[in-house]
Image (tube, rainbow, N blue to C red; front, top):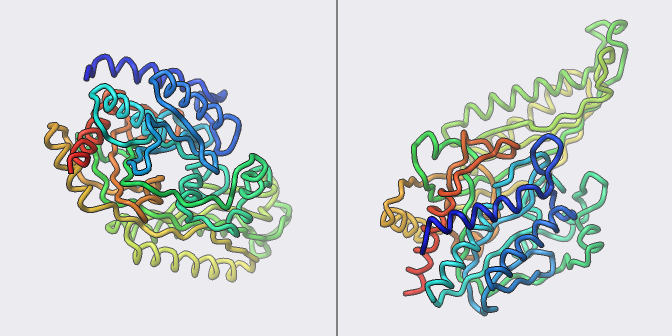
Length: 404
């Protein structure tokens, strides 16, 4: 294992992928189930081919890289799509980590059955739901949901899958001995703690809603304050109230965010007539999430009644927090310690493909730092040396498992 040479190799891999989906602002947009995501999958297959590996796709477009088509195997996986104007390393680092680990296995002549997986549409930017590719093959996404959720062009996920020749009724993946995922942390905990490796204990789940508020569009100068039905003012109250409820549950690691607001007509001299907003509540404590959820739903009703506004609250998802395999977590920590890596055990505030596998297979996850904790942002940066260090933890763990 020549780590200096490997650093040069993965740097070339990252640099080859960086221009794909680049937008005018300097970020990248690689939405799930689009041509740009297809290009990313093609680029990964090319890298794999140059390493002497084979590749294939499943019924929903996920890509698998392998040396032999094993019946029983471990998966090292992540995703290649991004949010709009996102960063270049979210997901990609995990897929390239898998290729690097497979390279090491091959070079050392080890008999470890491993496949690297690149899952489709992990981000919720396309259809409002996350981890689509991994949900489909673990059969945790039902057909009715696929027929409800739509992309920005108004096409349902079901329609998109069918139009691309994919099978929404795909069979459940089997033969998996365990699942591993390396991912950038997407926060500042590792960096502030001066740690290079995070061994993930649990993954937060998201409860999400679309909220539509209907007021009355009126002239901003000619309508007295007492006669207004201002949808945006109600939205503002809801935003600050959600923040308050989440603050009260901060000790349980619950967070609340309104990350999307569309105001209509959004004009200088017109009172807001309609608002669409996206509500996102996340955490690792089920009761804490439910508390914030119930409080904000009740407040929405209260504030809209007070202001004489109509509203429609549409649930998008109510996922459950996921605890990763305890034995694997502790074993990964031991492996990190044996490599003298500075590590900590931590929770993930963001969702990942690992969530879907954790429900049915032993699953372990390794975090590496991202500079200033920035992610889902064109300024997202990582140290490629950290990818090597995190990959070594998973590689050595696989070697331990292979000896059992």
